[in-house]
Image 1 (cartoon, helix red, strand yellow):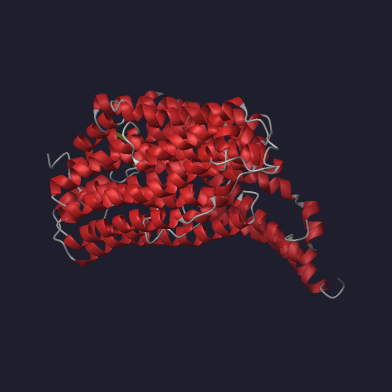
Image 2 (image 1 turned 90 degrees about the vertical axis):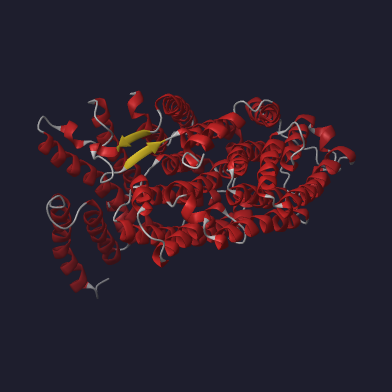
Length: 139
Length: 493
């Protein structure tokens, strides 16, 4: 472990920026390139980098696999609940106009909400797949 | 909420799937699945009644009006199939609990229910959507869930079967998207109804034919139309019994609906059937499926595989009706989609009972079943007979319409093929019936679990349905007639 000192230090420096960039892509997805999927992949890439550098044991202690397994359906739930809120206001499924008094704000909130759902699901599935590959045959 | 039924029939199973995955409680997952199943049935029936009384329902997803937004388009044909699939899959869910406890590892059961509901939501989505690309998304949702369902059985060969289907299914979906892309280039629209209007003004030229070919082959891979059926027998044989019953009675039927929709509603009768080669290919492949798959079924020793090959043959009947393409032929197809769904559910549920009680997988283990488990034996016998098309069972009704249709066209060869393939079916079914009733029980096969009441009840109910709808055709035949008259041949008649 001593040999990869450079890698460990530099990845420690990089990690906050990777996560921050993921959030940047997430929250600028509605008026720039990006969105939930890309942001989720970038976020998951941060965790995958952490795992590669510090080892699967430490990674699974810091980011338990269970969390990611629950994130997959949780994101879909966020997406569906957004749609159901529109239904409860008497508009069509996923009509974001229902989410605020002013339709334009509603559209803005709606796209952020469903992109959040996508973000959560993508992180969950990316990291779950990665963990499944890394721990293959060890369970 | 009734005006939102088009969205709800798709969303309710998916919400159920998500909740099951989040809660993962071994006692709750079945109840959640049943709850979302029954509410889906409720809304699907409302949908059908509305489509009957109000005509075609158009639902703008997200408030974006078609053709720009995604439209859910419900007519008398697809709402009928939505109701059928919702009801059949709910009955299988009732049956599922005890069967899964035996066949699956404890920690996999929640995932199975979740995938089951996800697949159901995807299938209903394919049926209800009026958008070419949205149909692709739902095709992928249901297929991905299907791969998981197939791989979950205790037999490790299930993994290979799932992988095989994954490769073939992905190729099919890719071809479909290429076809949709070509249509999009030609018409500039993804809304199926809009496409059908725009295609009316366009002269027939090569890209259009290419898109038709891509879409047909892509969907044919999902249908398992001969010779693209290679994934189906293994997938059905090694999936858990509940999964097999579900897939056999719903998944291929939905893909067939999608094909019918493209041929009749999107490209239109005139464009497709002015093309002699197309009819020839569909007809000959259907007839080869009826013969070839039945021949292979005769030589199978694995019980589930035998009926899987018989499924391939039965799919041949349905596509035959699409090829015959007159009023009676289409009714034959539509009725057989419903009937075959009921028959195969009954058969695979009965086989599930056998697996549950004494781990029967091979045909020779059936010997003397009539004495050991008379009820299940009777169910298998009756539903197998309706596969052949014995009068008084549902199989007879569909074959009757197919024969009528081909006689109207004057295609005696097709009539002959229908008769011969029924004889082939008689051979493989006869072998089973002989073993069940006329052979002595195998020694040492009596270590039996008692079959729970609800499993037997659902199996018997399905079997009774195969007879009931064979005698009283008001529900199946007449609804199919309405669907064909109003939706598919609306302009021709």
